[in-house]
Amino acid sequence: MTAFQQTSPSRRLDNAAQDHFIAAEAPFSTVVRKGQTVRIEDSFGQQAIDTLFYNAADFSERYSNQDTMREQGAAYISTGTNIISNEGRVMLKMTADSCGRHDTSAGACSCESNTVRFGHETRYLHACRDNFVLEVAKHGMGKRDVVPNINFFMNVPIEPTGEMTIVDGISAPGDYVELKAEMDVLLVISNCPQINNPCNGFDPTPVRVLVWDAEE
Image (cartoon, rainbow, N blue to C red; front, side, top):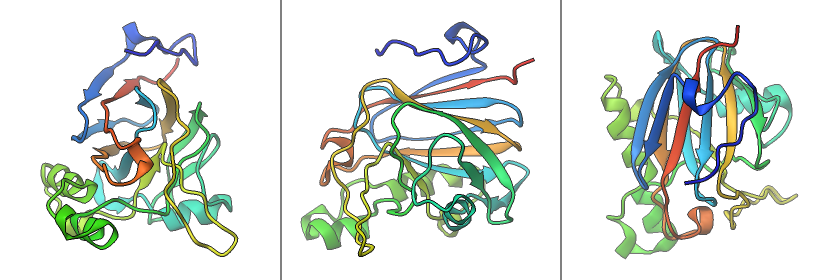
């Protein structure tokens, strides 16, 4: 277990409204209410955490990577980034980031992409898209509702030519991001099971999610 890094006197382990441990390779979801702060922690380091957000009151409004990148004029997200929906509204604001590298262009691994990239023998390995489909189904959604996602802690350098390559992660054990919800959101995570590229250090590990109520 990593040591808890406190970013605010009012956000401590003993007053967290939610505290979840997500097993390696597993999906997860929870609702984060407007004003609450959610922390997503890479507990053991070098673990990609594929993430989606939906308006908890209307799932047709969901995270838009295109609008988020266009809004801030940058390919990566970090402290100060507004997480924008397909309706052009701010869903969350990223308020803390101890790592500094988070991708929102490379998307989620799938059985199909595994086959193309790594060979037919990988066709049946578990993948993030499977996790997302399983998790959103709990909320009445289907595979068409799984949109391009954020890859927290995944290191994807973009070359001047526009080429992207997934390389070794730079996150250390206990690195985290914190986001303040600007509306009630459904948070959906796939704790990435990928073992064929270095996004997880070839060894998927557990992660942690904490939620705190709004500061008074």
